[in-house]
Image: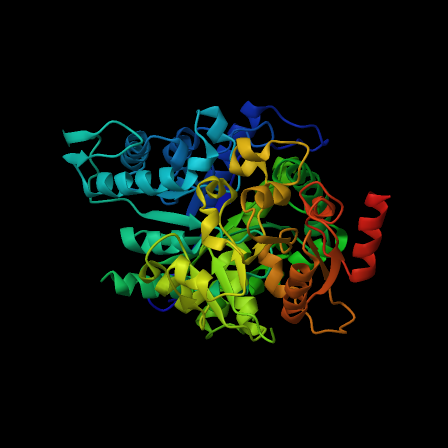
Length: 354
Length: 213
């Protein structure tokens, strides 16, 4: 699909709590101001998209992504702004539409939404939802969101919120629906669901060999055809960290990654990483994009080709990484990684990783 | 039973992966979700080509081994009669932070597969394939004798059923460490010594023995 759709390069953050140059953790408020600075720099260095993933924890204190995106919108003119992801199942689709339609207005049509669950589930108990209902909630709320995107008036009925009858939901968008994606971490039904509603597919590949997602990309295009729709973009969201050299990138990233995933392992059953598993993930068949610009660019180019994807969103940062390191990461990604990937892919298909 | 027929119940994250590795090991595989096989035809075509999408009852009837690959929170409404008299592979785990609190699985006296076995009283329950992520299951397969072949635990109260399933696991591409009861199978659960770990057989046996001691 790389020939059908233009290549696009984004960066995603979960509002990972930053530290200062002396290694002291910053406050939640400072972390949020740091994200705004990262977004403004991303615009300046030519990055196409910045995404903010809703989280509700002390190490990811970014629960109101659209507010932060609005602040970035006010200081930029070009970069597109979106969620990565919006946890639709524990939100009200009407409010999500209103907030992102507002962001779309503020930013002059630069809003996007990525719907999904993410691998965090903090919002469910917080807002009184039962995780066991996840799939039913997501199915029904996705259905309503698709209706809202078509424009008012809305007539809709379901089990998860009061019905709407000829309801005008404002603000209206100026030029049709804003781009909407479904983030998929491994559920084939979600791939088919995205095709059914005509949403683009964002593959969240946060561990293991990215090549195993290639059948999902094919399933998506085939499902679109089955539903009588035109092809749609496929994106990849994956974690990483770019610094001047491979060694520096790994030295900065590894202790923070170990700390965070170890904490997750206690609450979510993730395996605790080892230096060997980290080397595997950083290598050509792993999910992490950690290294010097050339290393990361080669890996992105290869995987976009393998996965028939046209968009790559680097999930940068990790709780505890210094703001200065994040700003360097954003700058290197925009000024070196992205131009190099474009160069590699315009020279013909990158060598496949299988 | 030279080549048991395998029915995979569930076409979510895990089901197609199990179907794929079983097909690659040479087994005939059918796959079923909760409804019309037509709904999973496309998924099967791309993610487990060669598996036959069927209604659950038909898939189970013709199968020697049934792999239960449904989300754990759907288990409370799963019909035990559907899999009566069958060998049932329980690959599920109970993680309240992910599944929500499931009353049925909150009894601290029993492991999750013991609770599954109580409810599926007429089936022969084997616990395996639960302690390594579905992401890794495919990548880590190795032929018998390979120096980096990993091991998976297989536990059951029914040792014949356990051995039938263990042979499948070995043909898929893993050594097995066979445990003599579902109670012992609690060692394979989240928080246990092998959960999420990538271990060779000797390492696996050591980890399990250290915990059991």
